[in-house]
Every structure is written in C-alpha cells, then in structure tokens.
Length: 280
Image 1 (cartoon, rainbow, N blue to C red):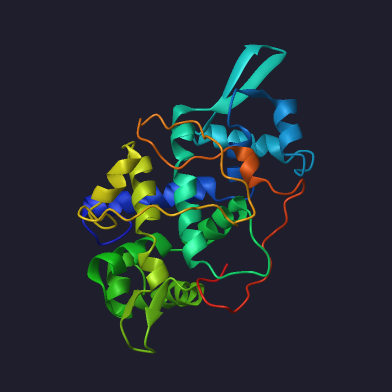
Image 2 (tube, one colour):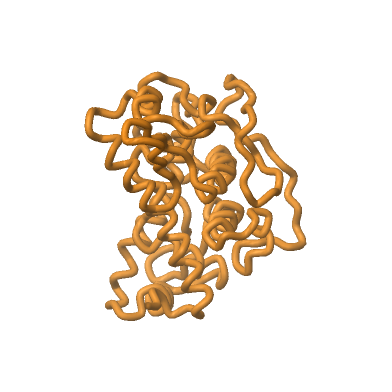
C-alpha cells in the first residue's frame, strides 16, 4: 500500500528505510548489535557485555532483533544456544560509521565529547520522527516546497494541515529551514548533508552493495567523490579497530564494538545546548 503520492519505486524506497530505522532505533538495539560483533555468544556471555540492561530487558530485545532478521539464534543442544549476526546484520555494521560522520559534522556540540554510540543514537532519533523520511526525500528532490504541496505528497489521504507538526519538529531539529509562516520549506545544510546516510541506508535495505549509495536517484552524487573525513567522536579516542567486513565485499569505515563503549554504564545524552546544529 502506498504511503505517499510519490512514484511507486520512490514510495517503496522510503517505506523500506522507514522500516529499517524503526528496527534499529529502539533503545539499546545498536549497542546489542555491536556487542555481538565477533563469534556467536551464549546468552550469559552477551548479558555480561551489556550489563547495564536490567533483568528481563535483554531477552525481548534479542527476540525483536531475531524477528527483524539481524540476529540469529542457534540451538546447538537444549543447553547450548548462541546468538550472532545474520549476514544482513553484518552488512548493517558499516552503515553506522556513516551516521557518525554526519553527526560529527552537523549535530550541535555538547560540553563533553560524546562516544560514537551516542552520536548514532542521537542521529537515529532525529531520523525516526513521524514522516521525517518522506519529508526529507521530497525536499531533497524538489528543493523548495510549500506546506500544502508537501502535505499532498507526503500524506495524501490526510488533512493537509497535519503536515505542520512534523515540519515544525524537523525545523526545530535543524534538518529543515523556512523563512517563516506561509513560506516554502527546504533542507538545511544538515538535512542536505544526510545524503550519504540515507543513500547508504537505502542501499542496505535493498540488499545492494553499500557503494551503490552514490548512485541513489535522490541522495546520490554520481559525479562527486567527497574526500574522506575521520568519523571518530573525539580526538581523545583511540583509532577504531577493524570491523567485520560487510558481505557486499566493498571496503568501508570500520570499528570494533569496544570503541563505542567509553563507560561501563552508558550515559544518556545531555540536554541540548543552543550552540548551533541539529538538536539532539
């Protein structure tokens, strides 16, 4: 069933990315996926790696990740069960440094260096706002769009005024700009900078090699080859170690899960500091 008034291929692309974001954004999911980097683990071994989770929290999270096709439960015997990444889960890992790169450049700064895992979680929270993916897609492809026209495209079966709450949120988040009431909406520099993030997510969702992100019809830049930049979350952090290579075969930024956990008990992001950039 179509979710927008966009062409079927574009509508399906947005739906896949929205579904993928909904799978990985819930609290602790990315941390669990990173804790599973490497050989499969028994439940007790995994629980020791994510010890901040309270009793009873890990099992439903694991089940949801298994249902999403990102984690595989293998029953060797009735007393020996392990958990590890599926091929699809392994292929997701190289997407995460792309998100960190965007966060380093565009998210507002806090009064402390944030570890990469918190950069990822903050970014995913912004991208999973209601209708966010569809709005960003339309603004990227059409540059400037009025609120009424945007509503007809993004939510064709709803009252057009319902577009304004998600639009106001994206403006507050720093991903969308407007010159005022009644004026067209357009992507901010940070919103436009999401091209590699959304292009890579789209490629992963479609089961394509991640380097196909540069060819994405909306978010790709076929002629441009931007210079690589470091994605580590602060200069004081050690250089990232090698991440398991995605099954796509292309080289990509890499890390080991220990580089993302800078504290034994993860701290939640602090309140937003008004120093510019998308709000966390």
